[in-house]
Image (cartoon, rainbow, N blue to C red):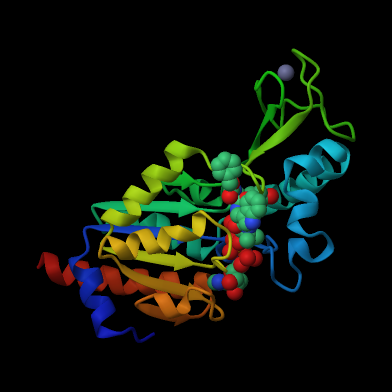
Length: 251
Ligand code: BV8
Ligand code: ZN
């Protein structure tokens, strides 16, 4: 696979690299994206499910939706895209993953520095006393589980629409993006904010922003380089180039 000279040059001299990822990187693991034609939001719109009011109005429906997604996530495995990102840590001084995904696949692939902007579907907490529960601890009987300590409703530890992102996670992710030499934007439609500001933060810090997507997005006109293709194919090809660049350099 051929890449632009300028891109290879930036990779060769890069010390710090950031991967900003969305649902598209998990598509090849069999996890439906949000907006694709088999998208999670085909049946329901995000406003109907991924928000606190919907949960209070119909906790069982929202809980069941997350149980359905958790089951898909449990059966899914990290794909070659996740694995290539994890292996990049052997070739750059500082590699960060800033993900919008809640599927835990980056950590299961072996990445060690991950900013989960929108939480993690494998964690849950009581909306009243904030006690955390892993999903193994929750009685699997149908319907939304109740807190063992105070009887409150238990919700997934994900950021819903209208909810603030974990402030410390977001600000350190922004800092990592601003400091990066190269920022990959992988498999995201870049329409959900404030997460979608991350590539702009990278750009404002002088980073070389590279988009990897199967189609153009709202971001495509704002990046330095747009590579069309599947994350599971492009990222391993980039990793092969990095290995060549880094071995040549160490000679
Ligand atoms: C906030 C977790 C304020 C849950 C998610 C009115 C009121 C309040 C806020 C707003 C409002 N109007 C707008 C907003 C802001 C709102 C927002 O941005 N709305 C959008 C819809 C316009 N944002 C918020 O509400 C945020 N909070 O603003 O709070 C505040 C501040 C202080 C105090 C109080 C309040 C919170 C947003 C977080 C929502 N939670 N997820 C869950 O997962 O259930 S969002 C969820 O959707 C994802 O996490 C992700 O962020 C987003 C989906 O986007 P993508 O990941 O990009 O996926 P998508 O399907 O769209 O695209 C897939 C891409 O992959 C495509 O481009 C496709 O081409 C590509 N692809 C497919 N296959 C492949 C591929 N690429 C490569 N390889 C492949 N194989
Ligand atoms: Zn409780």
